[in-house]
Structure formats: C-alpha cells, structure tokens
Length: 288
Image 1: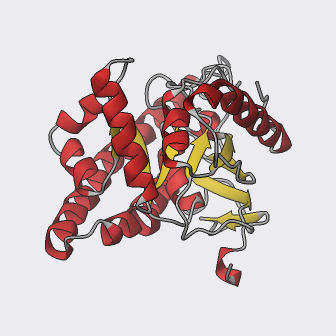
Image 2 (image 1 turned 180 degrees about the vertical axis):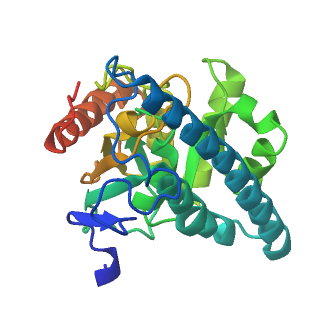
C-alpha cells in the first residue's frame, strides 16, 4: 500500500485543531453539548436549530448537486468508477465538513484495496454512510433493500453506480437476488453492509441479519469488519440535531469465507460480530 493510504491513527478532514473548525456552520457556536442536554440554554438551542436548518438545506442541496453530476458522468463514461470516486473524494468529505465532523481511521494497511470484499459495519447514524466512503479507499457500493431502487433520483443513482439490491425474505426471488449479488462481488465489486438492519439507539452492536453473510458465502470473498464510534454524537437518531465531534473508525483484518457453505452462515455471523465488537471497544465503543 502506498504511503498515502496508511491509515494508522490518520486524521481525515481536519483543517484546524479547534472544535468545529472547517465547518461553515458551527464556528460561532463551538463544540456544543450533547443534542438532548436538558441544561442547554434556550438561546443556544435556538441558535443550534438555526444552524441545523442551514446544515439540512446544505445536505440536500449538496447531495442533489453531486448525485446529478454523478449521473451525468456515468451516462457519458458508461462506467460507475468516476461517480464513486466523486462520492468518496467530494460528496462525502463535503457533508462531513458541513457537520463539523473529524474522522480518525486506524487499520487497513494490510488490505488489498483492489480486491473485492464485503465490508461489515455497525450502524449508529445516517452519517455512517459518508464516513464509510471517506474511510474505505475503494469504489464502495452498498447492499440495499430492493424497494430503494424504485425511489426517483436516489434509485437512479444507486442503479447507475452498481449498488447491490437484495430482496427480503426466504423465497425464490430473495435467493435469486443473493446469487446476483454474489456474482456482482465476484466480478470485482467491494460492498458495504450494515447487518444490524437499523441504527443502534444505545450505542451497542445488536443482532445481525443473515443476508449479507449469505452473499459473502455465495461470492466466496473475505469479510472485513469496520467499527464506527462517535457518529451517534454527531448526528443522533431522530431528527436532524447535528453537533461537531470526532468519529473514529477501526478497519479489521479480513475473515475468509473460502470453502464455507450456506450451512456455515450462523458460525460466520458469530465470528464477524465478535471481531467487530472487539474493534468497537478498541476505539471507545460499547461492543455488543
């Protein structure tokens, strides 16, 4: 790996060591208290509400701009590579700077970033998505519910950039979508999944759903655990109460799936969840 991709305690998106530096929205307020602090003065709450409204408008406008640009680039180039590079180098860093978030990444030096893999991440916040784009230096795609493919604009972008859609349930269509997802990964796509299925409200890593692991077994590609801590304090569940802060990411060692079969999925899930919990605790998280 080149020196530019050495991630041991590397700081990403830090322009200044002062709290909130680099964000056009938080400089006047500093590093505020927790979003639901009952002692937060009324005036300061009102100021934060104004700042968060501006941040929400920025998020929508920024995303619309770069999704449109990505669709145009993909249409012209006939390849999702440039669009995914734009997401990693422009869209995601812009959102994180707008939130006043500093991202610290450790691990990943021994990975071959050109090889396909399934990255499995705990889920704390919607800001996990741009965090993952910045922390993982590859053309990253996501496993998503099939319903998202039919949402105008967002669904167009997801289809154009090769996101992997999986049907829910155990029926024939679900099994077919698993096979197609496996083929996509074998063809060279690196995929990120949030196997908890929803954001954690208590900071702990909850039970995993099986779909992503069945995809990894189908594709016979390694699973790389990726722990995120701090995202829930930058953007908590419920509403849009953004506060500046640090987000820490730990990239683990790949866990092989070569030779595993469908019947091994529960053992694989337990192994990956245990590894992810250890990484999570190593960066200040609660683990399972």
